Image (cartoon, rainbow, N blue to C red):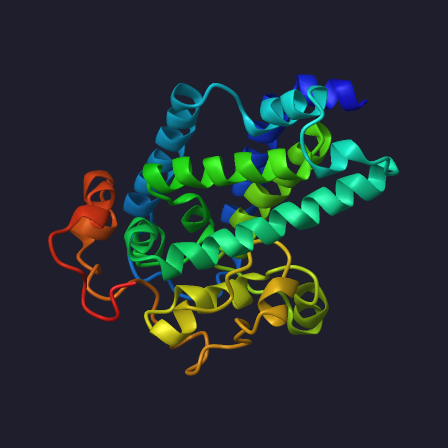
Length: 275
């Protein structure tokens, strides 16, 4: 079973992505949490275009995938987990949790370092918050993120199957927790106790700096609680929450493909705190 999954990992990942994207889009149309602030078709065209461009960039720029690197590291005995004997499921869970923590730290880094924060503004400049916001990243940020992930995979000694599971969790949770949807109130708390929900992550996309610099988690919600970056609700409530980034509200900048690509290289920092 493991060999079959790894052999067909590309088809599995693309199929899962398209299925969850379609499911989230249907949920958003049927029961949106907030009324859209801008037409969806221009944003979707740009956000999906970025996702396609980023996928092509990674295939051209890097000699292997994260799963391929994990296999190479395992063959050569690189990394912590390749020096100790663990029960298979223990190693898998440990790898997924460790990689999720790395993504949390990386996200904090992309807010704290000015040069990296400029790249990350592409993600926050989306004037609306829906499932495609979860795939809206500048190509340079995607490339740097993959290199950080590569380093983590080698250091951990992550097995290829564990990396595949993590990649699926990361990509699908990003589509989910950026959704313009709301989990029914009785279930929000129990789900949020483990996973980042749309209501939790929507706070992170506020134009208010103190709210934007919170709720960095992508999949597991525990890291924000542990490190004091958790904000349960926006100050004015979700309905009144303004999404976007100060100074980047012009649709020609925030919703067009070329405009989005140019955001990190604008001559002056946008208004606000510049992060």
